[in-house]
View 1 (cartoon, rainbow, N blue to C red):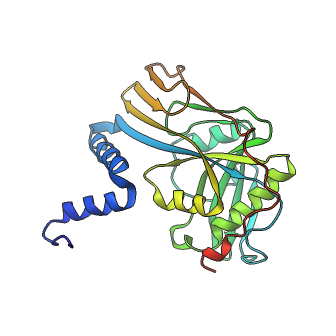
View 2: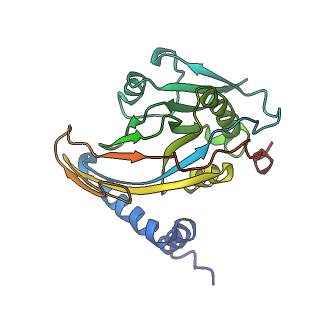
Length: 251
């Protein structure tokens, strides 16, 4: 039975549960409460880690060629994009990240960042390590809101796949917010393997982590006390070609 419009809070709760499930909806409610702490001193992040196959082939089969995807080699050359933590983009380049920009006639419409040897997390104190030299890390796949549901996401992945495959990579690992069902769904349509989850709670200088991966639980107060989560894709199969899934995306 539909909820009465006189109870908007219950409507939002029902929508959240329908989209995220009870567990992640409860975590999201805690995250919203922590956001109310003055000064942004507290926050909660809940991550899903996945691996996506890198293989020869094309996602778009020639479609979306009006969307050009090219590397951006320096922070100074980045066009205005989504707001990120101050210094985060500079830190990515310092780690050796490669940024691929998607552009159409209107300008930049998306980006993806690639790191060959794991990465330092932007949002929390954590390090992601890769056990296999045939693995890479991708992060911050972003598409202009008005372009979501089109071919920008697929074109970014098509070019990223070509770049990584040429470097000998066979699996690309990433973390996605458990609260971002749109991103989880987009990755799932391209075919992913789940690698684990982690929840981080930050209050002032303190940070608590609970993860399905070693070290499982971590509590720290110092900036240099950073948990390291390792991802090993060596036991995952190699695929001979990409799944041609752009047919499920809008042209």
